[in-house]
Length: 155
Image 1: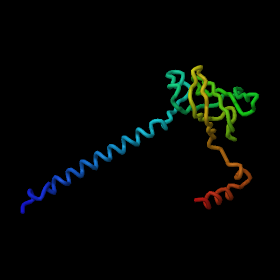
Image 2: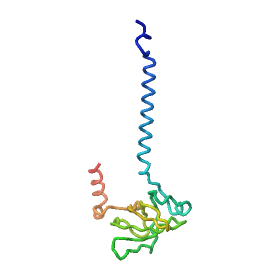
Image 3: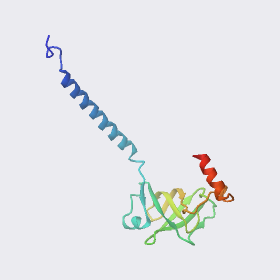
Image 4: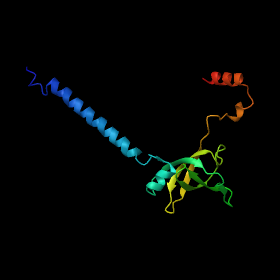
């Protein structure tokens, strides 16, 4: 009996399997991209938002510095308003919720949310940024040797 009478040649079987595997891989990648498209959050600085406003329904991240003197707490006690700037432009921000302990005027912040039609950024989440001199509260009273020992124990 010849190989032609037994059906598809072994060489062609491998080719078919490779093609099927490639199609499955490309399909899985496209499915993952399609599923994550709404999870993508673009990062903007105030000058980017002023130059080209993002779509109102698109979730974005706004990063910059909290302008000194701009932080105001609303009468409800949980809503704050402040201005984020990057030295070139300013964007007003409103946030309702618990503010991170590192969030202060003059510090860096990343606000996650959406830009309202009136130009105010409505934040759902605030991430306070600290400088390179930041030391956790638990380590402020430690000597440098004690701090190095704690770091070594946690690695």
